[in-house]
Length: 83
Length: 314
Image (tube, rainbow over all chains, first blue to last red; front, side, top):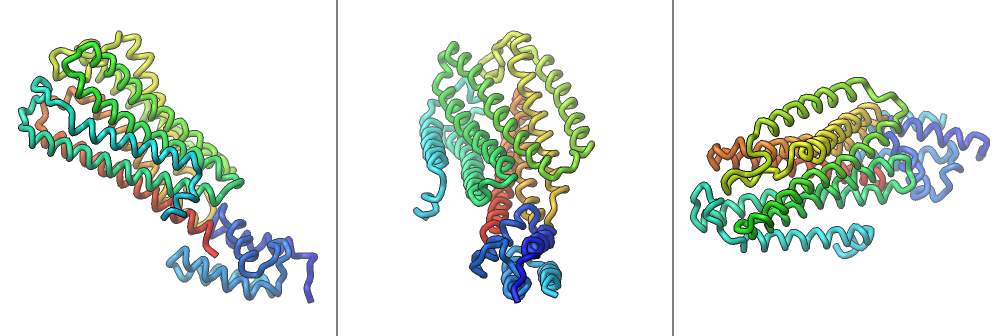
């Protein structure tokens, strides 16, 4: 079932996690990942999209840092939002 | 490569073309300048003079080329953050770099023209005054842009600018101002050069030296130092482990460029003190500072590139 009531909040939660790694670039980064890989409006993100989104975020953050623990930590925290 | 250039704003492409023309002019003027025995105080042969000229042109060229890489990197980065709150701050940094590089190139051309006028004292005096003002005007504008950009970025973090970021540059500026005043007013040749080797004389009355050179120089150093510390403040306060790591390169580059430009200006102002030093010592000091400024532009280039990757990775 797709819920739309909390989508904006979910979007904000993802951005807040990513902001700890990418600072002011976080929102642009997350929106780009959603638009490019999920082909949808960033505000329309749902919990069902998290598993696909988090794998792409992991790959992209991995490109930006050689620190695997940072990537794993970020991926785990975003994955937890799907629960 | 062609598509890379086409992706840049047309005004920036015009800047690149103008800058390249100035460089070619500088190289032609430098190597075709007549040799004046009166200013050849180290009695170098023609080939030795050519090597000295090449050894000065080369580091300046490296600074210019790495500066262009840095400016292009930051221009490309800004194109990825259009409409964001940081755009204005980084645009200020970009403008500062562009003006600083333009000042370096135009200053080099005007300096090269001076070599053709060594027998015409009145023309030499006019050009010396123009060079004196130009050497202060361009960095003053550039550091003004750096200050404006750094202040805009520091305010974005919504945290107050630290006391340290205000007090340390203030103390440094006051110390530099007092030292500069002592250097200028302890030089008896400051108004008129004595002998042809004293090309560093300012040819200005004391009031004009204070109002039109000392005040702008001290203002410029203040703007530069405050900009450097505000950028550090932004780097230390902004969120984002990976963003901050990329920003460290850019901030480090700007810090290098500002602090070393101030050091280089200080040494240029002290050039009469070095007239008695041997050529080898002077060249080593000049090369070291120029190499460090080039390193500053390389840091800036890396930082801008890393920030752009953050904005484009998918």
